[in-house]
Length: 213
Image 1 (cartoon, rainbow, N blue to C red):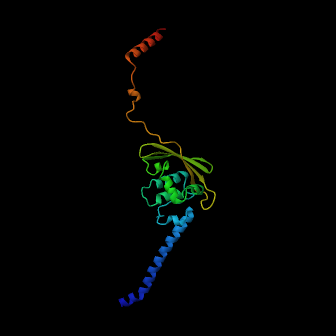
Image 2 (tube, rainbow, N blue to C red; image 1 turned 30 degrees about the vertical axis):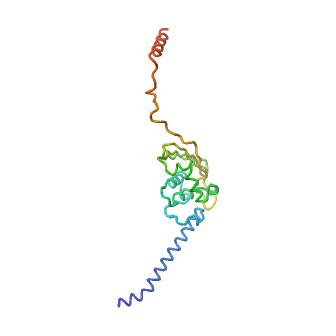
Image 3 (cartoon, rainbow, N blue to C red; image 1 turned 180 degrees about the vertical axis):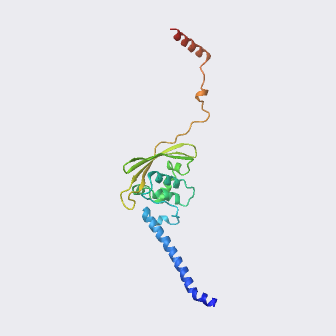
C-alpha cells in the first residue's frame, strides 16, 4: 500500500522540485534586473555580486545616511565588490556619467586622495548644511598614517525617475592636503627655553623702574 502511494506521488514530487528550481532561477534573474533598473546600473556589472546587503537609493534616506552608507561601503575590507557597489549606487546619475562604470569607479576610489576613505583609522561626519535641494557635509578622516583628511560631500535631491526625491551624491571634493600631526618630541610652551639670568635681571630692573615712576 505504502509503495503504491509513493509510486503515485513520485511524479508530483519531481514536478514540485523542478518548479521550485525554476522559481529560484527566475527569482535571481528578476532580482538582478530589478535591482539594476532601480540603481541604474548595467546588470552585466552586477554578475557575481551579492545584492542582498546593498541599500539602494530611496526617498527615505537622509543626506547624512547616504554619506554614511557610502563611507561604510568604501571601508568594507572584503573584495567581493559589494562595498564599492554600495557607494556607486548612491552616486547621482550625473556623478556616474563622469566616474563610471562600476569597475572604473572602484579603481578611482582606491587611489589618492580617496583611498583615505577605504581604510580609515577614525571618521567624523559633520552635520549637513541644506539649501533647498542641495546638501553639503564635511567628513574628517584620520588615515592609517594618522594624517587628517577632510572631504566635502555635495548631494542633491533628484527630480527625475527612477530616483525622484532621492538624495544622491553629486561630488566628493578633497578639501585639503594631508595634515600631519606634529612630532611628539617638539618642545611645548612649558619646556620653552628660559631667558638668560642677565636678561631676566635687566627685565626685572626695568619693571622696578617703571613701577617707581
